[in-house]
Amino acid sequence: MKILVTGGAGYIGSHTCVALLEHGWDVVAVDNLLNSSRESIKRVERITGGRIHFYQIDILNKPALANIFRQHKIDAVIHFAGLKAVGESVEIPFQYYHNNITGTLILLDVMKENNVRHLVFSSSATVYGDPDRLPIQEDSRLCATNPYGRTKLFIEEILKDIHSSDNSWNFALLRYFNPVGAHETGQIGEDPLGPPNNLLPYIAQVAVGRMPHLNIFGNDYDTPDGTGIRDYIHVVDLADGHLKALSKIFTNPGIAVYNLGSGRGHSVMEMLHAFEKACEKKIPFKIAPRRPGDVASCYADPSKAEKELGWKALKSIDDMCKDTWNWQRINPNGYK
Ligand code: NAD
Ligand code: UFG
Picture 1 (tube, rainbow, N blue to C red):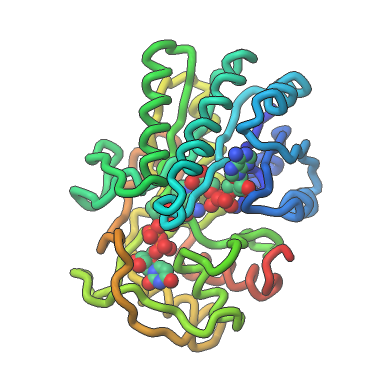
Picture 2 (picture 1 turned 90 degrees about the horizontal axis):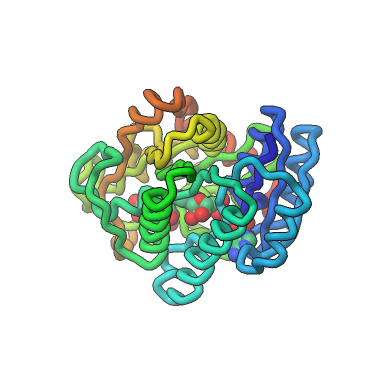
């Protein structure tokens, strides 16, 4: 099988490339390197001893994308390429809608022209907004609360409409909860541009001395210790979920939607303590006001993925913190 991975140099994309190569599949990766580095591709090749056909292109560039489909006989696509910062999406919504939605439409158009009808799409738990019930099941109410979330929700709707009009398409919509961690070698991991938006990369940068302290956004939520609760999932487990989703769409299921989470909620305080254990240091923190748009608690019911894909998150928060710390310690400045 030859799999095209869009956004293959990024955080989740690079870990999924490792899983694909280790599974013995051919990998073609495209990325415009807007939020990533060519170095991650080299390191994936080093970890696996495999080879990636890598192209630095923008998926908005239809002729360049079409050229890749001419050069390679692609069997399926895993579509990670997209902009993902919630706050930034509020400031520059046009770029988010254009990049994420137009980019997906161009990809689908090129796939159709080349008769490639299998796609795994990176959706997000952000499509549940403020969840109406916990744990969140796939049929929970959908309600995105920011432009980034709406791009995910609209793309899901677009894929559903395309499938309704032509059932030769097969789509897996994977709603990730909170991806964290890094490959156990410490060679690839999350390398945010500028100050991290997300909890674990921020804690890791405090631990390595790049940031003075963590701001905890609110300790007055209706949760046992007052801090926000999320469902953290190790990126290596997540990568494995993509392999399982690919196997599923090759059975021609039409549209298949899955939560990829651990099913367990952990508070900010719990994550902080788990990280302190992993790095054997105290992490200085301050209690700051709540971050606008944050919800108190969000965690998955992942039982559908277990039942239909045979997939389950295996790694604990201790594994997540250990591997994040290992990556950050070996690469204090990321790929630079
Ligand atoms: P990432 O930024 O590390 O990876 C995305 C990659 O896509 C980057 O390498 C970027 O350079 C590339 N890219 C962006 N626009 C492109 C374009 N027009 N053409 C070519 N390449 C382009 O992010 P990630 O964390 O690996 O996320 C991957 C996907 O998963 C994204 O779609 C994201 O929205 C989704 N997701 C991420 C999270 C998370 O917390 N990391 C949670 C839920 C969903
Ligand atoms: N938090 C802090 N301090 C920080 C960063 C985060 O206290 O510096 C807290 C947040 O308030 C929240 C928790 O840590 O309670 C997790 O925050 P993240 O920013 O790591 O994750 P979110 O759940 O807010 O958002 C993430 C992705 C979104 C995605 C969402 C659901 O960033 O893109 O998960 O999948 F939509």
